[in-house]
Every structure is written in C-alpha cells, then in structure tokens.
Length: 294
Image (tube, rainbow, N blue to C red; front, top):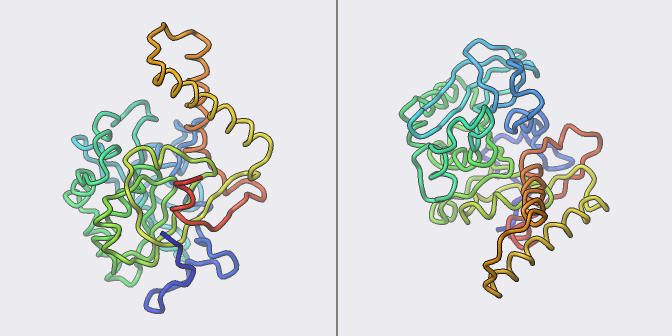
C-alpha cells in the first residue's frame, strides 16, 4: 500500500508540513498518544495513559473537555481543546490499557487481536463520540483524531464513519483494521507513524491500514545500538524456531527465559517510546508494505 504524498484538493492541507509531508502537530500528538512510564501519576501529563477529569489543564496548552469511558469494552478517550484556538480540537483514544496499572487489559484484548472486531468503536458511538465530532464539524472546527496501538485501530474505524467531519487522523504504531474496511475507503487525511523495528503493530492482528502518509521514525536511525538489539532479537527467534523443529521439551533454562524477557522489553520499548520530541529524530517516508517486510 503506497503512500499518497498529495492530499486531494477538496480537503484542507493546513495540517501538512509542505517541506516534510509530516503532520504539523505530530510532536505533541505523539506525547498525547503514548505512555510515559516516569509520569503516569502526574495529572497534568498529556499522555492518554494518565486518566484525567473534565476541566484538567494539560502540558501543551490543552484542556480536557470530555471523557469517554466504557468499562465493559475497555474503551477510553478524551476530547481536548487547545486554549489558544489556533489548533483544532482533538480526540485522543487510549491504546492497550496496561499502564495504570493493568486497567482494561482483559476488556481490550479481543479488539487487540481481532482486526474485524468493532466492540470499542461501537462503545464510542454509544458514549457520544460521534456526536462530539459532528458538533465541532458543524461549528467549522473539524477535530483531529489520534491514537496509539489499539487506539490507532479505533481511530481508523471512526475515520471511516466520519470521513467528512474529521480534519485529520494520526496513528502511532497502530494495529490494523479489517481488509474490507481498509480497501473500500480512500481517505486522504491519514498519517501513520511507526517506530523503526516495530513488530507488535503488525503481529497482533494481521490487519490492514487506511492508505495515507506513512513514516518510519527513530531517534538515531540504524546505528550500532539498533543493529545490536536486532541481532539479539534474531537470535532469540532462531532459538525458538529450532526448539519447535527439534520438538525439544526440556525445561526452560533461566538464561533463556531472561533472554526472552529482554527481547520483549526491546519490542515494548520500541512500541511505546516517545521519539519525535527528541533532538533531530530520523523520520523517513515509507509504505506499510515495506514496514511489514522489514
């Protein structure tokens, strides 16, 4: 699925950086969407993995206007308003709910691993998320919608339901949606960001993605640290494959268990790490197909 570098003429392009093709608010939106483990108890932290209340003022100059939460499905989102009115309202949808602590994990799991499932987006509709989107569209202030991981999946599903009312959609290491939905819609205001070496997003549900702008991001590119961690991951995968082929049923040795944990730590860190606010991050335009095969 190739990226389309030229948005159609019938949608506003004020959210596109003309030099890079990136979304002009991707730095703050990444902070909104991803967990930051060192600040999950700071109520003014803008991460969606910190629960906020209506009226809370967040770092970055935003105020929480509404909170949408469904305990049955695990859906959680916040509607945020910029205080300067130069930026649009934004809907931030939480990803896999395992950060405060383990809240919503069981409820989230079906939507994480089944691309076709729409339990959480249906919960969003019931809670009035669609009405909130439409209300600002009618005020000539169409909002942005953003999310990481599972949140990115739900954001894409909402984009299909409200293609006329959303200014833009931004996802980070998003899970996929059903191929039928992705292939039958040609929305052009979609931005996907994936961390260099990201695996969870593509392994979780094998879903597809709405076409749009696509970027691979990293702090330093394929430097020696990245290559070293890649080698560790490859060795761990080869060891698992060899065990399956040889049908080994020996007890798992402590060192092998520790190596497996280290590999998962690497992948989890890549999935959740905030990158774009670092000095001189490496941002490369790419395609979903290339990322799947890398």
